[in-house]
Image (cartoon, one colour):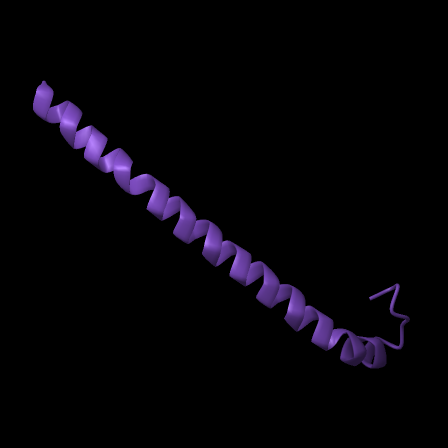
Length: 55
């Protein structure tokens, strides 16, 4: 019983690092996506012949 509690505690100790890594990757991907869409706005405006507010 004691062994199972210590193994659970060791597994739980890894979770904060995993959460930090996942949040960091998601933040980076969000910034990357937002930047790439900002760059494509003029192309989309020309291609579809629409205004910036429509894009």
